[in-house]
Image (cartoon, rainbow, N blue to C red):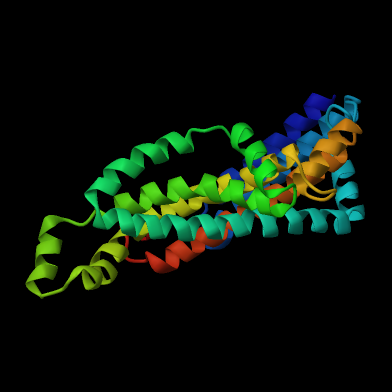
Length: 279
């Protein structure tokens, strides 16, 4: 019976989405947002039905209704964890890593030696596992948000650096020759030609880094944190078998990550409106 009801829910969601996708207004922004929303609601409804009717233990998988109830009753705790992990740890580390990556990219752009030397080192550092670097920063900087920001800064530094360096070299020889014909030096050529042309590459690195920042901040808290933070809460809640709280923290992380990525994509759309990918 549970699977039959879940199948009916899936069929209803599929029918509605197929009609919306084939409607004349399928290219409108409202419909493009409505289709994934209906798909998500369909999955949540199936989850609720299967967990409830099959009697799945909440320790294994809590029902969405239980997660929503925990979320509503724990908003002050969730907000404190969000502030500690996302605002202080992830966002601060993201900004610091981004600024450092841009500065090093400009230096590397002026020196072929530095470019050839730092990119292989960057690839090596980017491959280091967070479970190895996070305890080191916790020992160096303490268990508060500063060590989490340092972990995030290192994680986002190299993707942004590599994409920025690649973007700065993306202009053609004809374009650079034209700027030299106009008598433009390095800095005018950088700001008027090469940096605007590099923006799609830069935003690609920035969007990749949004996900890395959240992962880094949360995972780093498993290796030491004060009695607040999303990683701390997930770790302690798992030990207490409070899986509804674990899933509530996951919901907060998912919403924050989606908003962070969406904000970066929106800025990219405004800045690189001229690029074919935005048309």
